[in-house]
Length: 96
Image 1 (tube, rainbow, N blue to C red):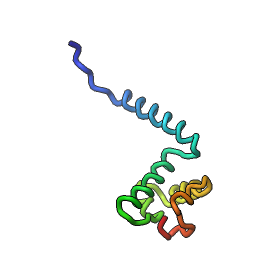
Image 2: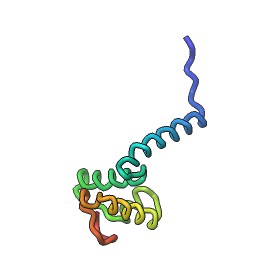
Image 3: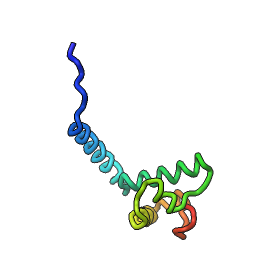
Image 4: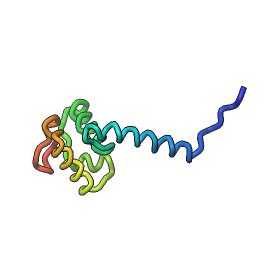
């Protein structure tokens, strides 16, 4: 019986890149990117598990991204109509 060889870093990187490419292709059909889908997931998770709304600052801390990057993603989500589904408030300092 042949012994299984461990995956090396280049193979793992190829798998990761392929998975991200497939996910982005699927998400693109819905006007999303991987980051925007993560943001939506975090908004929903926060509401259902913690029973509270999430602020933009909370999202910045959760994903470790800068304010401009998160603000841009939130604006794009609002532009795509996801604000109504999540009841995202207009004020950036107010909870989503």
